Amino acid sequence: MALMKNYLLPILGIFLACYYYSANEEFRPELLQGKKVIVTGASKGIGKEIAYHLAKMGAHVMVTARSEEALKKIISDCLEYGAASAHYIAGSMENMTFAEQFVAKAGKIMGGLDMLILNHITKTPVKLFTGDIPFVRKIMEVNYLSYVVMSVAALPMLKKSNGSIVVVSSMAGKIANPLLAPYSASKFALDGFFSSIRKEYSVTKVNVSITLCVLGFINTETAKKAVSKVFKHEGAPKEDCALEIIKAGALRQEELYYDRSILPSLLLRNPGRSIMEFLFLRTFNVEKLISN
Ligand SMILES: NC(=O)c1ccc[n+]([C@@H]2O[C@H](COP(=O)([O-])OP(=O)(O)OC[C@H]3O[C@@H](n4cnc5c(N)ncnc54)[C@H](OP(=O)(O)O)[C@@H]3O)[C@@H](O)[C@H]2O)c1
Ligand SMILES: *[C@@H]1O[C@H](CO)[C@@H](O)[C@H](O)[C@H]1NC(C)=O
Ligand SMILES: *[C@@H]1O[C@H](CO)[C@@H](O)[C@H](O)[C@H]1NC(C)=O
Ligand SMILES: *[C@@H]1O[C@H](CO)[C@@H](O)[C@H](O)[C@H]1NC(C)=O
Image 1 (spheres, rainbow, N blue to C red):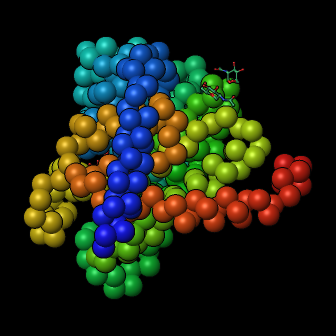
Image 2: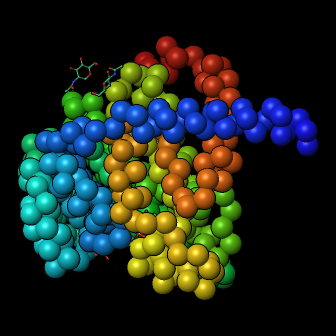
């Protein structure tokens, strides 16, 4: 106990102070000025707030979701807030052809791409898993596969711009979540894929950053409705959450932990995993890896 109090806690405190200092130090809204950004799942919730922040920073904004009416309103708001341009293309991320063509069209309309913010999810019931296999397939396709499809379609443009991929995930993508097993699986999949791809970009010198956003409970209408019976507290503010997501992407951070409590940021960073990944990568023959 004394050891913990005298050494571990102060060290942890210094580590965190450094982390937060460096994370918040350099961000300026001008970093987004004139940048070409895609935001998915932008008809409401966190995605909509991300689009509004980007507009106020003077970015080119391209939004998507299924609800055309909501998107129309959002792009007119974005123009009012100062977006360099604002467009929408409506469609469903259950459709991989749409996902792919959306990115291509967005790139044509904006004349390139600097940041791809992947945020949409399919509607998720909070309940025990009782064997609904079609739902597991659907949630993996919408929450995970469409993210992969869009990042593949966007990569040539992102390479040209030294751009960024921002993946909105959840604590459920880092820890076990009873009542949300299929959702949790889809979010873990994002970590497995995008964290692996990040290592590949690093060894093959692809200068496209990948930011995984690990969010706690956020006060969007959907989330409040879904978990009001499970959680007593209100959730963290979606406007502030959206801003932190943009900041982390612009600063090319590998991960963002956002929650009303500091615990996830303290406990989920997993230095053991980082050390294992470092050691594991050292056993690879990098020359061979690149020539493959
Ligand atoms: N809120 C939280 O507590 C919380 C916690 C942790 C992580 N997150 C993550 O944060 C992100 C945003 O969450 P949120 O609470 O803001 O969600 P939300 O308010 O429910 O918004 C979801 C968005 O996805 C779109 N969408 C749904 N089904 C779609 C489909 N088939 N094809 C295309 N778009 C579809 C919705 O628009 P349409 O219905 O118009 O298509 C909407 O714009 C998600 O990745 C979520 O996992 C949220
Ligand atoms: C999927 O999207 C493509 C491209 O937007 C579209 O042509 C096609 O009709 C869609 N398929 C379905 C089943 O909606
Ligand atoms: C991308 O980064 C490289 C290396 O720093 C630089 O030479 C190049 O000009 C950058 N390209 C753009 C579009 O920023
Ligand atoms: C990667 O791109 C960023 C953003 O343009 C730039 O600041 C950085 O210098 C580039 N890094 C390398 C290694 O080219």
